[in-house]
Length: 434
Length: 158
Image 1 (cartoon, chains in turn orange, cyan):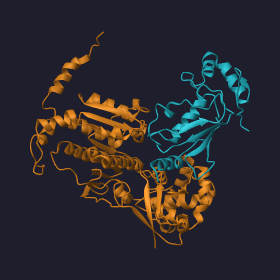
Image 2 (spheres, chains in turn blue, orange):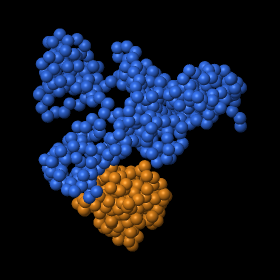
Image 3 (tube, one colour):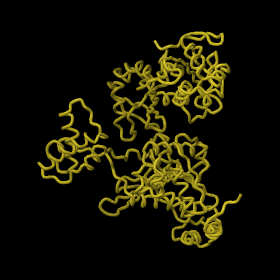
Image 4 (cartoon, chains in turn orange, brown):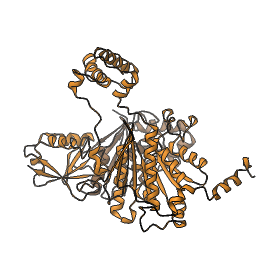
């Protein structure tokens, strides 16, 4: 049995695919050299064939950035696109994640995005994976030429970065350029990471800013912003009034109470702008996702992907930051490799330790380090566990070590291995007594 | 430290077990050998307390952990010697899986015994042919009774 296709679909599709002007605008940069084009660039049919028939690109994340990235790649002529996302569609995504419709709520982002792009851009093949990036082995990532990440999670970025660096270290044939985009409100960044060659994501982990905390004296005595009043209500007033009852930021009654307290304080200090939504935003640390920031960052990422795939122009070296809060501002610089980077650096990490330090003090010093960004480390030496926070039996057995001197615990040894849920690799730390 | 030890440290310190599962380390200095106790809170095996030993070798995670049940249990996917039939412990093992996946997988066997892939053919046949009879047999066996002429260990939670 044959299925009738409406609107003379096949012939329309065939003529569309055969239309040589389809990529006319992209062809302008692929057919000729530009002022900064590398001399090895050949251009013309060979370059176009590679882009359109051979290159294989992976997009990580099909959310705010991912939707834009998939659209841009498909319209630039990438024809073998793969997309992975573990998430399902929420109604609050629909204002900016334009590949999804109301009927898609609850379905897989990767699957819906792939289906939509294939329907809308005839000829492109998008292969979806609904799941976690961590569930795929290195052999999966080895099949792609380029990886573009539009993620909202630091730990996922650390993981894919460490995986691609590891692959390049094991076999330089397996060097996969990673283009990483990220947005937060009106700010964003796009960067190109050539694993083992340029600085990697972990090299710049100390640039992550901790969530904005207001000085407690300002909150208590001299509030100037609506946020100060809300922080006063949640940090100082709530524990005073409710003692041991924990603030539940998902409970509307709790938010309501904070809102009323903050409003009264704002009135007292003649501060405007305390609203229910802001109260919720401040206590839950919500930063609104902005569609135009995603569009700008995704455009930059896909521009880099096109340049890397075709060599039609030099690609970004290597970090572009965008700030849209007060104007349209970008700044591009070369972020340098960190020699002691736990992922791509060759040098081992050292920690200066006092001879009178207990293990507990040493662990606290690790947690405080900006260049590690860890929260719940477990420590071992070649002789076994030094301190593990879990499982319970090992925790019980190693807990007494916390009060002992590091010097006594280590003896002749000076190497400690540290793991942490946030760390994509293990850390070897050399202790240096000062 | 060896790759296996590093990976075991990662797996164990990041374990987030439900209240129905606990680990026990007879020698906390030897993290490659431990036991897992499962106390299902629903399903046919509710009320029982099931113990498994985990032995991890130097090739982990390229090889799965060796897991055995220390009790004699009437279950389609466990034989009378304590061997466990779970796909991810054999043919479907991948290094991206971890100890958590194995533990969750074993617990699942108690919630959904699978008669299509049996190690104890008699139990599997009972489950397929007569579910009510199978449930009775499970109850009898968990009390330390005899099913089909075979006596089982008492595994009721104290």
